[in-house]
Length: 298
Ligand code: GLU
Image (cartoon, rainbow, N blue to C red):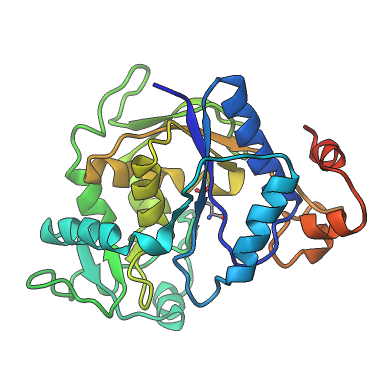
């Protein structure tokens, strides 16, 4: 299979040094393997995406010397694919509508129990308020967030959770060729209980979005034939959700390569609002693409 990777930015702000590192690393890895580097625009959050940020992405990546085949996949043109996948999960009774807002969730969680994690990859772990009371039959609601019943989903996947070599409990595995934030690499195991306890019922369809990052990313990686996902370590924890969704939707699981995060002088991960480290700012100051590579350690 041809090594195929991608860079998948959201046009919600300027690309910074962290994005440059991710895109250059993925493009370098594809070149070293004689493979392909693809670009995907993750623009499902219409309230935050702007055409000028998308233009700036193309411009900055070109300037960095990165090339990709056209046409570029844009998530906003794939809503019907996301809806079909949601309908399939809905028809299996794995989704339920949720009417809780952030405040309801925080109040329901109350004082956390000792030793029980409070936060998962999407923030506070959902306490399950709507899980038993929401209807799961009839046609799929369109204007309410839909959550995945993660325990039911994991329990339906006996072919994902197996007794694997060196494991005494049933685990799912994915292959990590980079490293987790605490250095895990190779075959990464996780159990159904870990999903329930440390991730919880994630939202798969957001109100006014009709999808979510987790759902779209797995469908798009599969549609683009991605064999290796190269991305920042901040997304390592979310990978278990992606592996679960791939199994539920009959999609292949690529190899994951989570890379180091580029941090500011205080050690904080760069964010879109860190305009001081925007690639466009370095460009305006006369930096070269080679200097950007040196700055991120490539
Ligand atoms: N769109 C995501 C971001 O900008 C990237 C998601 C991914 O690489 O899986 O952080």
